[in-house]
Image (cartoon, rainbow, N blue to C red; front, side, top):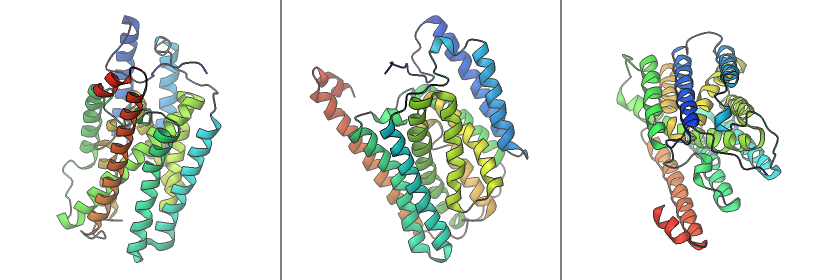
Length: 325
């Protein structure tokens, strides 16, 4: 299999042409994402944003901005085990969410939260175990880590600020008892979605099919997974457009911190508070459940990072690498 360069906007650029292309692409796509967030209120969002993104990508390609970065726009290098893993985890997650919200719902709080939490854990811990222990890859391959941290932090702050300005700025929040549990839920769900849909699914699809199909299919799977929440076609079409924005944001730095804990949790929090679906319905005790889910995810990441360090140390000349890590 051919070796493919890291396609993200890295803090460390190579040649002069590569640095110029990196900066140009970063600016172009950052402007696109800012514009896409500012257009959240338009009616045909799920069509306009993906089409605009496709046209912009074609324009960047014709300008030769992708060439010096070695970007695989489309390819066919399928790993069947990876595809089976993506399909299996996706079906399990969507099924658990459908059972939680479609079968039990808010009238059966205990099983709702248990199955909801289990679905999120399957979507984060499952891919971590699969990638790190079974396929011997790194956490960075699913977007977890401090790689490209400067560009990631800068873009995260910009996108988060724009998201806040069009949603929560001057918005009158309900009483804290109604919105604080929703905020913790949004942070938990946001981390699950960032790792599962962007780091794991999008990253896996890119290795198999290239950048463009990975962005489109990951966004589509993100939209369709909301079937588990009981959403209809019009809502999922909107979420497809939003999924394209999130997929591009992740692709720019290949780090989930670009969309979490600012961009996606802010959007999810505003959506829940404005709709009233969860605001006022989540008891304070629910914070313990979401906190436990985040804690288990954090422990899984810590164990995976420790496993990586030990694996590096066991390799010839790996002691220095492990110490540096």
